[in-house]
Image (cartoon, rainbow, N blue to C red; front, top):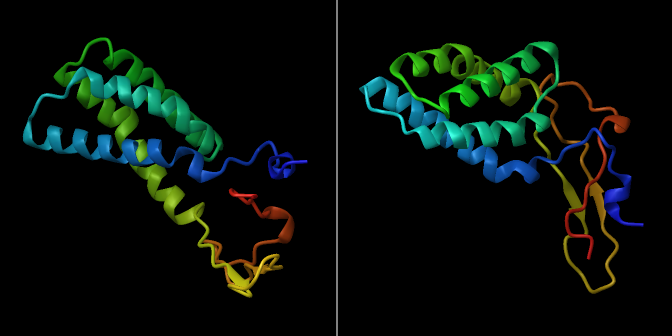
Length: 158
């Protein structure tokens, strides 16, 4: 049985969207900069954003307010990838950019766990039995993370 078979269905590992996450942040910064200096925004930007949104939203929190933001972003970028106008950018900013900025801040503060994992021993001859300890990990609310709220995920099981 592989390690993946133990992963709960509702779990999404962040590393699976690392590239999309980085590109999303870059595009949002580019859009904001373009708007602030009055530069034209390329239509391809909204194609890229729409595609990224379709990928990353499954990994984001799924409360009703967040879901509304996702749908507004998808609808807005769907419209703007067909035709970009100055008013379109304003619509994007109001309907998607501002709520997404708030959501990203919420994700960074409320949903980000700081993993602190200690391995003992750290080196030795093979086969080496290693004990992993994550009791020093921090939950954003400063609460202890119940053991049934997390699990170990070994990316390289070899």
